[in-house]
Image (cartoon, rainbow, N blue to C red; front, side):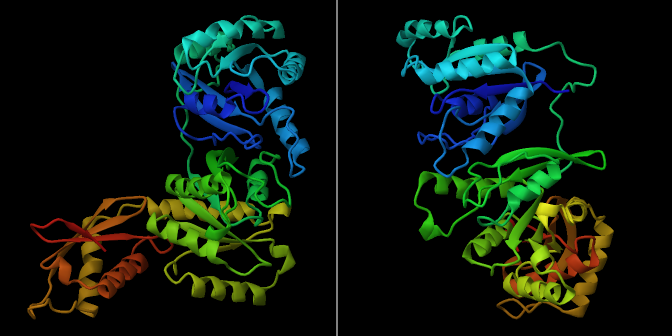
Length: 445
């Protein structure tokens, strides 16, 4: 069992900044707006050779304007209930306030070992002010500044000193998941409900409120004994509707999640038409050359083979640049077809990571050229394609050596790409095709 180190405190004491600082990546949103963090953010990291799960939580005592206070509080409680150690964060600059007393009372009920962390001590002159927090009953605070990178080493040492001895089943290194899945789509298409179905628990908050999920949330789950990572992303709005910093963060979090992923699940609502946001996401997925499954959710409202054929046509007519993408019809609220969708994603992952021997590639290239020769170059000379080789996986990246790379037209490059996809084990995934001359640099196709 991997020990969990849970970060708690009232709103705006710098919990997310501290989380990012310890993880050494910008994962949680850092924003002065109270209540930005709603879900538990969990990252598996190594601290001086010890694997821990660091957990960021929402601010205690915050009254959410969207009526999600109870759900946010339940996420905090779930984090506290599994804590091997707690980081109780307070704000040196604001001083001790009544809300800190309320957090302290709740932490004491858990009985978990706790480090009082006095954050935002950006200068050494503020250290003396932190003594006042000793009245909370957790001893002298450990004074840090996530912003100015003060005393991180001392905090790590204090965490390690509180952890129980490693168990026999505790890994020596942070285990990599079998596959990373980015779950993207516009607002209220059921992404978080799908993630909870994968995790078999209310791992992320779901509600009819548009924009409930604000961060990208990593959720580990298991299927057939294998570990996977689902990345739940914020629902996106049209560009002209993005009016706040949170909307800005949501868009960029979704883009980053697509780049991180091995396979993307692009979600649609069966009761809604495809919109501009869906097309923007599809463009991002295409640019990143990621395998994608089109997931039509809420299918119980429109079940039937006729409707299924209509949606198949609708999706492939709309996203002509992705004719290879498979389609899944699910009802996340009832966990219907969820496992089959993950099986499809695994199939795409295997295709995307397949290596094809060079002789097989050259057989396919020769047949493609014999069936349809490229047009001559600008001087009327034939364009010769000498050989093909695979240089990368995820996505499969093929290089063709040609006599005149620049003379090879875009339609012909698309033709070759299509032939490779159909004849090789890449039928449902994007293929990158690069063309180079014998002495010139590689050119993308």
